[in-house]
Image (cartoon, rainbow over all chains, first blue to last red; front, side, top):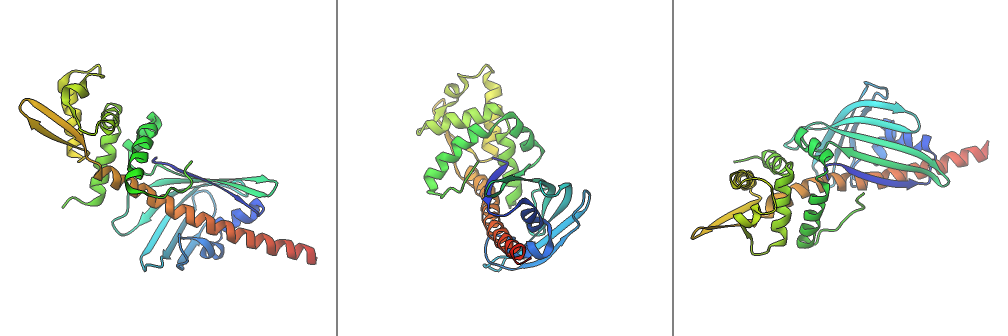
Length: 152
Length: 120
């Protein structure tokens, strides 16, 4: 639960998806959960290079994240550190990994955001606390009638 | 006031330990709560060690304890867990929606690229 994995099948070749993930002009067209604008996008796409993206949501709130590219293998793999900047929402540094695999209809994208909490949580993740927490999550989802997205 | 992230840290720290997770999982099944000795039974550890785990869970707000006579009844307190899950779900919402938008965008670029290739 402290890592999130999402898979998408995209009708576009891996090189196009890779560039959409890393080119500032492209990032400005999709980054963020709603139709709010991207205010700033900077990328230095090489190992050790950094990215920074700031966006505004439709509710007016602004959010910025930045990190360092750890792996850059066009068009199949991208890994970077991730940190939210500013506000009270900084829970430390986490890790984003994206794999792109060519499939018949285009690209299968596997996205993982991990190390979503502190060092202790990271360890516990390896110890396998997911089962217990998933069970509790189901319980609380039942209570809150929360809608589930595709969880891997 | 305890800030949001300190609370989350405490919740996650409390959840790190397998014994504490087992206690919570047990309490989840017991609507009326459970006594300390009932909770201690499945574990190969002494009662004082169980009490320590309960202290950590209590500090994190994950359980409540109430005493009637000599019996302490422990109950699950769902709010901090709900908060922790909400926090994790925020990431999910962000990425799920962003990746949908990325997919739609890349597909439009693919269509453009195909058109250019045809024109050539």
